[in-house]
Amino acid sequence: MDRHRQQTAGSRAALLGAAAIGALILGPGAARAAAREVSLQETGYLHAIGEPGDTIDERGHASGTYSCSITVHLTIISANRVTAVFTVRPKGGSVTGRGLARFVQKGADGYFGGTIAITGGTGGFAHASGTNIGISGVIDRETFALTVHVHGKIDL
Image (cartoon, rainbow, N blue to C red; front, side, top):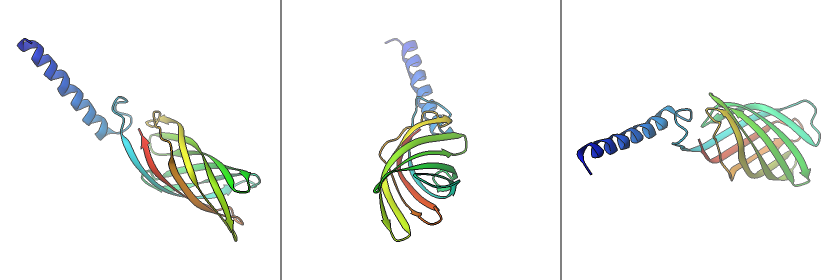
């Protein structure tokens, strides 16, 4: 290889390396080719909106990796299973998803645990993805106050 081709190849490699580092520093909106994995640890505190029935709409705030607002639509599908559709709104966009959890009633509380998957996003989170993200929590069956814990990895 002649000297000019070696310099050109070296310049391309340097530019690609700089772009990858820039994407990591600047975050999800910088360069889509350089996806990054984020370890997610969130705790949300929500309250019911409207009249609960077989479906319960909840709204609140999560704190942790991304401190942000969250809305959840819970549907009771059997005595021991619930589904959830959620939207979180971290700075720079939103993330939506759905999940399935087992449900157990003990006294005035209901405990749940299962997994969620990301189904879409907007803004800087338009390419967010993730499956088998753990979810657990408790719902007060009298007030419908919901505490939820989410943990896992997402790709941005």
